[in-house]
Amino acid sequence: MKYKIILASSILAVIFLIAALINRKADTSAMSDPLDPVEGKKAVLVELFTSEGCSSCPPADRLLSELDQSQTIAGAEVIALSQHVDYWNRLGWTDPFSSPAFSQRQSLYSRVFDNDSIYTPQMVVDGRIEFVGSNAARAHSAIAQAARASKATVNLSASPSQASAAAIKIHIENLPAVTEGDRAEVILAITESGLQSNVTRGENSGRRLAHTAVTRSMEVVGSVEKGKPFDREATAQIEKGWNRDHLRAVVFVQERESRRVLGAAAIRLDGKP
Image (tube, rainbow, N blue to C red; front, side, top):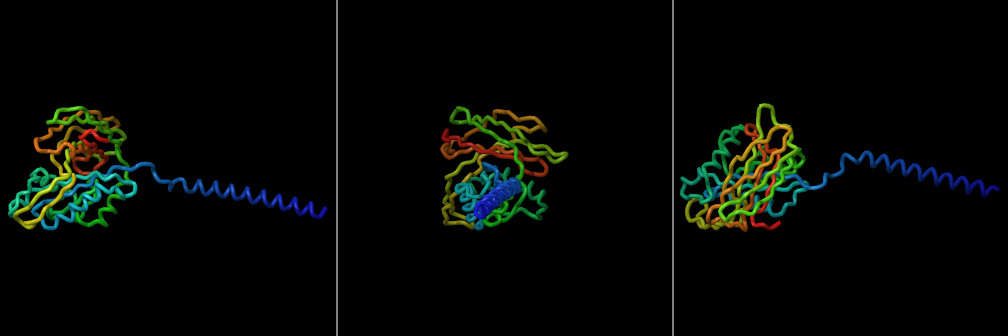
């Protein structure tokens, strides 16, 4: 009889222990739900203002290339835009990829960031954070931070088109709240990678420079209205000499005044996935 009582007590103890473990597991699971990682990655727009006439720029060009090709920052899909400014051209070397439009775009950022002057290399992440473009630690931190923000859903598809043009179908929805008094513009850029230059004058004289995601063109193609999806087919001109195998279309939504980027996506124009 004594052994039966001990056995019964042992069985009851095991049952209570199992029940306690189950309850503890349920409680722990409930507590950990908010920390579960979000599936997929969020697009983060990384702009680099650079110049072949600037001796400090090649390290930043290499960093942008690494960010674009490695895609190793957790939760982020880096979408790169290398924009070559033209104000270095007067110092001995005319950058073949430079444009006054990119200098003007950088000036708009300077106003928002309240900078006393513009400089190269400058990196801007999602239109919100700026820093010296060769600072890898700052870049990784800023991109990871931007990937945690709410983003619009931007879907792109490229339609069959002529060699001199690319037709891009754009669908945007789930737009985050736009700053009061501002408006969200949809911008289409064409970028080309695999570009190189032999610099013969200026600060980088004698160097062979390589570039990734060089912005060939950029234009506003519309604006997104609050609570409404955006659907449009935009046509981008492809100039002679651009290598279509290395071209991408980049579409992003940006507030006109604050310069805050609300969503982005990119698609290759060579027909490959």
